[in-house]
Length: 121
Image (tube, rainbow, N blue to C red; front, side, top):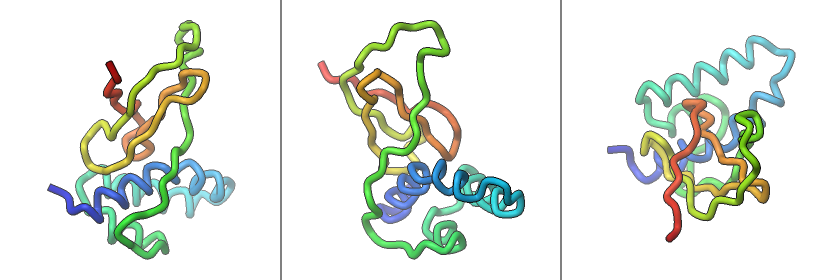
């Protein structure tokens, strides 16, 4: 079971991955380094040392961040606001998120899959 620090850092890494990649556009070496770090977490390495390798010091509670969202429009569905909290699909991290105003669901940036919805009654 991952430590609270590793769960928090894995959530932070998942949320900021799109920004890290955007900042590295055009630099294939840096993009490969970021992808290798995400793969290490995906393959079970604790997030704290991965974040340190990326140059981010670990701490108990990283900043909350929502990350990029993927649209459901591509599937031909009308946008619907879904009420509830999304969580990490693997249980690896502590990240929680919400659908946006258009009903777009958040994605896990480490595994590149939709987060899991825990709907509110």
